[in-house]
Each structure stands twice: as C-alpha cells, then as structure tokens.
Length: 259
Image 1 (cartoon, rainbow, N blue to C red):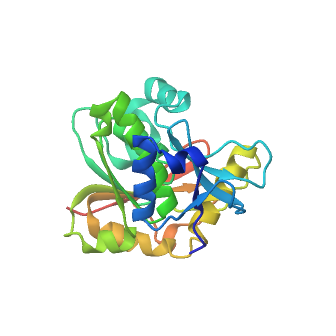
Image 2: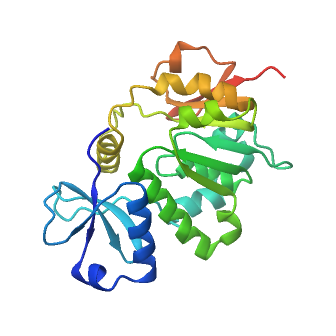
C-alpha cells in the first residue's frame, strides 16, 4: 500500500479548530492519517479541510481543485431526479424494484457515486472501504449529506475494512446483493478521469487482488453479485456470469445465486 497522504492544517485550524475540523482531525487520526502544518508539508498529495469539506489535493498541479465526495452535487442530484429510476442498468443489475427494499453491499465504493444511485432508488447500502483516504472522503460526504437529507443518509452504512475479509466473515447469504466495481485502467483521456484515477491509484496502489473479491461476494450474497466493468474489460476471475446488462460505457456482469 502506498504511503498515505497527510492532513495539512492551517495555523488557524491547528490553534483553534472548529467542531467539524476537530471531528475530521480525530477521524483521520483513527485510521492512521497524520497531520502536518501548512508551512511544513512538501508532499505531492495532501488532505485539506476547505470550507468544512475534506478534499484530496494534488499539489503538483497548479490551481488544481480537490477531490471530495459530494452527494449533494448537481451531478448527483440530476441523476437522482432525471435518471432511469428502477430501469437504470445498475438498478436492473442488482435486482432493485420500486416495490421492495433490498440491502446491497458495495465492496468497492470509491467516491460513492453508484452507492448513492442505489440508495436514492431505495436500497440500503453497506459500503466497505479499505483505503483510509477513500474512507475519510466517504465519511465526510455522508456527514454533509446527513445535514441536508438525514433520511437518505440513514440508508448508508460505512465501514473501514478489507472487503474480502469482511465478506468472508459474514454468515453465508447475509445481504441481498453484492456490488463490485474493481479498478480497471481507463482509456478515456478527459482531465477529470485522469485526475481522479491518478489520485485513486496513489491511494489504493495496484488493484492486484480484484479477482479475490468475486468468491467472497458469492459467499456473502443471498441473491446476486454484480460486477461493473468497462465494455472491453475481461471477466473478473475469468468466471462467466449468469447474464450481462450493457450500458453505453460499461457492462454489468450478473452472477445469480441458485436459491
């Protein structure tokens, strides 16, 4: 695992942190993220608290905007209001129906975008994140979501753990579905993808154990496991799915459990 970015604090944040800043400092410390003063840091990547929002900053890029988890962003809200609802490919893949609530374990939540779509459509979502930095960004995103939409925030549970270990330790068929979106090299060259994928590679390192996720997920899921892949990507663990649901950029390989 790569070296962890440190939390860079201004002199004001060190001397008299606000209640939110103190919470984020304490949470960072609990997962092994050290703090450093603004004057001392020379790291390429740092965490910062900007306007009560935790951000991962790339200091090698001039005027770079930070990466944060924002469930209240216009993009998230637009997809929530104008997306395909239960007919969205991801909803169809996990078996989400408008008339019933299911529990989905997201073993690779990243910035939480797919988890947010599932929760907004009524699913209860358990996010398991092993990266301390991604975990902190997700926790901060949920904190801010809870201030604006507390009922929606209650549909999420977030744990800092290794997903494979966590799923193997569950009783068999503990959740309705498991959702996997392992990191895969992106060919798209947009600045947004390059920035986020570069930062995620630094945070997570090479995703060399992705194939191990599938057997663990099949153990934990009662009904199905869904693997999101770019259309050109090979099958996870070389295991053929029960079916696949395609979208413009991705496909969802669905492994249906025999019940």
